[in-house]
Length: 623
Image (cartoon, rainbow, N blue to C red; front, top):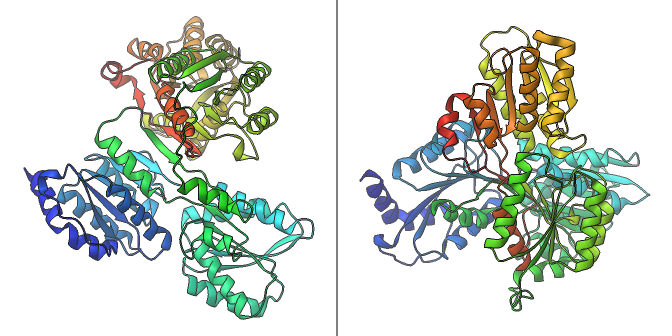
């Protein structure tokens, strides 16, 4: 009853709250309490930044499409303590779901975790620490910075030049990442210098004032890179007042409307901008999926950033605003070509079955080929898909590098490509539409966190790490994430590491070699997948030791075989890496065929399963 009364209180005060905190100027339509099914609380870090005002407006517009949804906004006015109180008050009022854009990632982590224990939580823009939330939607700031750096290096071409960087508030981790990515690229060019940095706190007037001062100090400035279009406009105004016309201005945000980045590019004020979606509209869409208990929802959404220049701004505006009247696939089945890297493990076989089942249920014609863990076979398969003229190509790459040429061929043929399970290394992000899969780095972190949580003293632990296929994304990232956490605990030391190629036989062979060298001095085995852990178990038993007791074993995948090993006391923990990517892949294919852009990365939701809870957790497993 308390929850219901809380909802009624919210509804009765809704008009006042939206007017005062959301800045809404429109008259709200009166709706009876019986029509309200869900009340969503939005905790905003501030309403000073134009970017956040637009985020709120997108949330409001998307929610308005649903008569049974009500939104309550709060504004933390850049104060983390106030935002903690705001979240507490929203929870007391009985909201069904919380959307929060944190003022400070670290400071807001505890209250987000607290809210997550009670209701679903969607985090926007700035990620909190850990995984205690339902969904995160936010940009890859370092990638955006890198892309801006590449573009500005192209603008300056071989002549080089002087660059001024205009940043938002100092000390914000996401903005530090953006700047780091930018400087990483610019630092490669000896003839390009970042001569000064302005901190303008997202304000146009502040950027204009500081740029005016800087122009007196530096008469030769070639490019200004601002972390928002709004600040770039302020810098432009300063240059215009002084009659300077040779400076190029580049921003970030790419919003539509008057003085939005798209209009500024079209008008020639900005040389270019990089889109940085707020995620507000998507937050409401996913909130309703969460509240309606839809299946297969992701854990993280990383929107794509688009480079917008005068050459493509009109095309971009048209593609984002125009609803396609003619769907070319409306009268026929969509054809998807999928190249699977192989059938090397239980995980991979479950992944293949998920894709086949989902395609059948979605009525998508699937051409499914296996690459036998050979890149040349997969490249041949992708070229066959291009020749057949499929609508979409998806593949799980056996290794990260070496795909540029064939993906350029797919792009030239107008066929979008989706990466499934494994990512690739590429300097051209336009070669693929999206990546759907796991956060492999976080899986490595989770394995390490479980391990350090098992030991209460500081006695040294010797670790054998059995890696996956050389140069594959999961092997590289799981190693990186594990090392990142372990580095904080010097008593944990990896004494032996080698590739078991993600196979049981490979894991057994590597473990035999490690035991021959170190014998009973080995305390822990960290395997990059369950199959290799199962192989290690065999080698340990053959050596005369007890797996799971004499040697702790933690692995990644959470397959049926891993649960059986935990129930038998031979495996201590498995970190989930779900193979059930089929439904999300088919949804992505349909989205592409509707002419819509996919997020850059769609990260699946996963858990950690220790042996102590294996019997209970095993009941709900599907693979």
